[in-house]
Length: 221
Ligand SMILES: [Mn+2]
Image 1 (cartoon, rainbow, N blue to C red):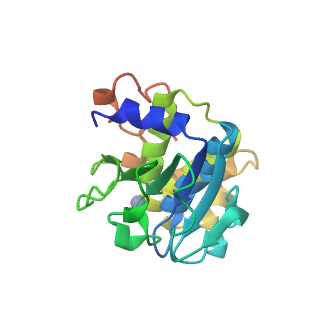
Image 2 (cartoon, rainbow, N blue to C red):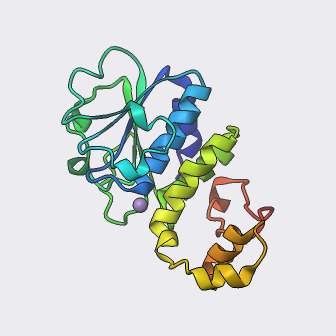
């Protein structure tokens, strides 16, 4: 996306971020929202997090899940100053909180998605159809922006990537665990044994056109 750096500048410049999840929120949009909330707070932004449907309890472990508010519309929340509304994993405005197309000039709508049919409704539209999850795109964003990735962000980003790659659908059976023997590291080994070879490879780097990032230094998961 040619405006990628400008999108980062816009996020850094504004004092407030509103983060939006899509309807029937899943681990991808919620993991992204949690990671963004953590980053926004670290950058000193006023942060809020909304979605049109309730936050599923199963994702309650995500940092700042308690800040999530179910709402039908953004009306009354924008228009008081410069802010960014960050929408993840959402192909069109009809799939999230209402009012997104009436936010006014001082609001930058940051649309980050991997659906090919995304309607490009944002001020900035970063749509990567080849991205396996938006979580991976958020990870790339943090790297590209040189925003520190903290330990706390690991769970949200992992949740997002795992959700869209089917990571948790792999059966974990006790027999493998028993064969595995030692207690230390057994969880990791057990997880890896059921995962297709393709998922064990380092995530492909698609940020090359944006400049400078590579995941080559990361060990295979
Ligand atoms: Mn997704």
